[in-house]
Structure formats: structure tokens, C-alpha cells
Length: 305
Image (tube, rainbow, N blue to C red; front, side, top):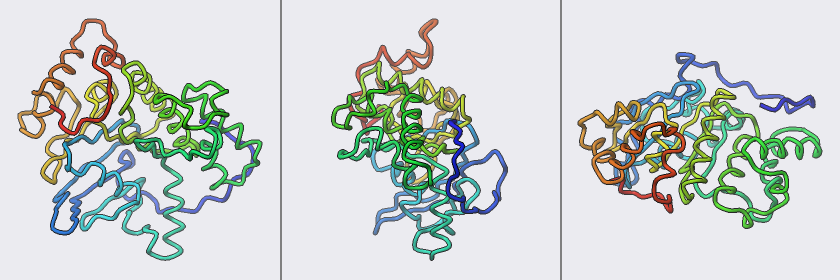
């Protein structure tokens, strides 16, 4: 991504990877419980470097909770999670000053795009994008502004958008601005929470293509939560289906479509699943734009069928 010539804050060393070099995230036998409610009973999967990996599941399956655990916002009751070679049990902010520093350094190696953007309404779009640079580096204000403008351009936004406020943006523009902020620190890993929710088909197609472009250009590893079946067909290398506290199936969309596991079948046997599959069979239709034939993605639907 964008290179800089000014001195940044000295990075804080993080532990060397303990797993295979092509594994970026390792989730092993994770269990999560809230009171008497068991959300995860035994969740395990790996995410490989430079792949686009998706988590899907019905309402209450624990997708959002798992995302929060991956980005250090919640700790599971049992099991192990390693991200970028670091055991997350060792870096909780409540573990002391040294571990808090390691946690801070680790967080700077990933970017997060939240479902509703998460931009500060009192700041311009460019100020929002530059916020991580001002917070975590010693770059001059001038260079921060230049880099923020570059990130906006990278996500396909015109220069004048930087001077606008989040409330002035369309849904598609807001998603792109949020993605630009997630990319501000040149992360190795990108987390996307419902990246196409609320978008019309054309805007959603643009997000699909942008995610693919960023992965291909910069070797990013992408982990996403989505209900958008067309997005999954268009960009996901592998998909994990969460249900009943466990991963019920994992593989490419084509592999999942051939599985006979009930929790997996619900994503393909209902009207939406059948329609998405049929769109993949349209002769000559590019995968990243097939969903433009679908109904607008007005909101994420908890029932995928």
C-alpha cells in the first residue's frame, strides 16, 4: 500500500507465529456462554493467508460474538484463538501494562469495518479516515491528510468526498469511507461486518469488486460476516456455517452447496438460496456482478432461506 518516508512510532514487538505460516487465524475448541445460554460449544476453524473467509449462520448462531472475540472485544469461556500468531489469551487489556502494549500493537495490524460504519459524525470523512494515523503514528498533519486522501481514492471515492460529513453520504459511499478508515494503517488482516447490508444491488456489486481488488493487490486476508448469498458466491474463497454452537460445514460455496448437512442445506434450499445458485449459472455473467439481478439488499435477513 502507500509508502511513507517520515518516521513512525517504533512498533512494539509481538510474539513470533507459533503456527504454520499460511495460517493467519486459528480458532480451536472455542466455547462461549452468557449465563445459562451456550452460544458456542465447540467452534474450530483456520483462516489462511490472503483468503477471503466468511462466517454465516442464522440469528443467535454466534457470528457477531465470534467476531468480537477475534478482535479482542470479548473473551471466550474456553478454547484458544490465535490471530497473526498471537495467542489472544495473553494480550487482554486487563492483563497488565506489558500485555496491553502487545494488544495495542496487534490491533494495529488489522482493520475493522463495522456494519453501520462507525464513523464519527462530528468529523469530516477525511478526518475520520486519518484518525488511526493521528492516534498511532507520529506523522505530520500534512502527511496524515495526504494518506487519508489516498485511502479514500483507493476505495473509489472522489476527492471532494473527504470534506463531507458522514451524514451527507449515501449508503454505498459510507461503506467505502468506513473501509478506507479500516485500511488507514495498512493492515494485514481485514474484518468486515455485513459489508453490503442496506445497499442497492449496484452499490453492493461495487463493494464486492473492491474487496476482491484489495485482496489481490495487497495480499490482504479478509474475514467477513454476511447474510448476502450473492456476495458469498462472488468473493468468498471459503465459508464456515455456524449452527448449534459449532461449525456445521466449511468449504467453498460450491462445496457447501453439495453438502447434505441440514444446517448447511437451509442456505441453499430456500427461495433466496436457489435464486442465488441459479444466478451463478447465468451464461457469461461475471460472478462479482450477478447479484445486480437480485432484489435490493435492503437489510440483512436473519433467516437465510
